[in-house]
Amino acid sequence: MLAPSSPRKFALFSVLAATALVILGGLFYQSLASDPVVPDVSFTNLQGQQISTQSLRGKVVMVNFWATSCSTCVAEMPHMIETYNKYHQQGLEFVAVAMSYDPPNYVLNYTETRKLPFHVALDVQGKLAQSFGDVKLTPTTYVIDKKGVILKRYVGEPSFSELHTLLEKALAA
Image 1 (cartoon, helix red, strand yellow):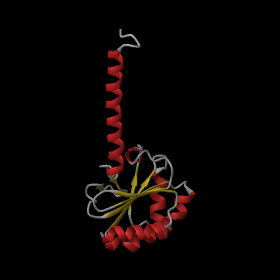
Image 2 (cartoon, one colour):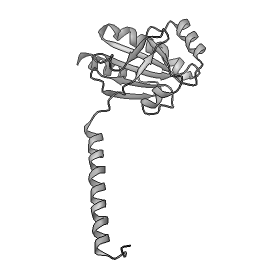
Image 3 (cartoon, one colour):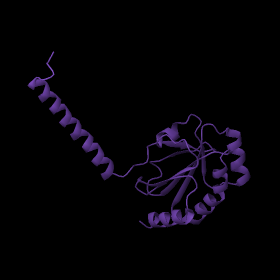
Image 4 (cartoon, helix red, strand yellow):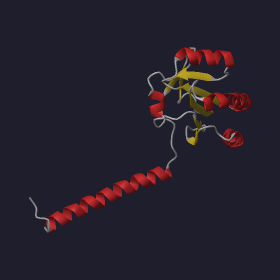
């Protein structure tokens, strides 16, 4: 065993500390330099159709994690429908992902009675929420550009004027 005052021990710890700083610094720089990319996942909508994030490349996408028991989610849904209807023809896709604790029959009933015009997917096992950074709070909405880069994450109801400005910019790019 090396003595605490040993020059070899000091040198070894110095090398390890320097290496750790270089690695951590590189990771920190990488997180600043690179944009967050949408996870490579597939959604299964209520009709059984598979929609992968890869298949959505070339479109601007909104992924909205919500629940029928979430009063803010229910309150924002008419605005989400309006947003989708306003921008869909310009290339906007929308996937509403029901949280794992939301009973599937509630989601189906809500989707049918409100005539949701976009894809609605169930996240029965919670894997989609985990893939998007372990989403726990609803509503949480991601805006993703045509290249699959996450432009913005909204926790809670977004400012729809700000959201529309962001969508217009992303759709024009």
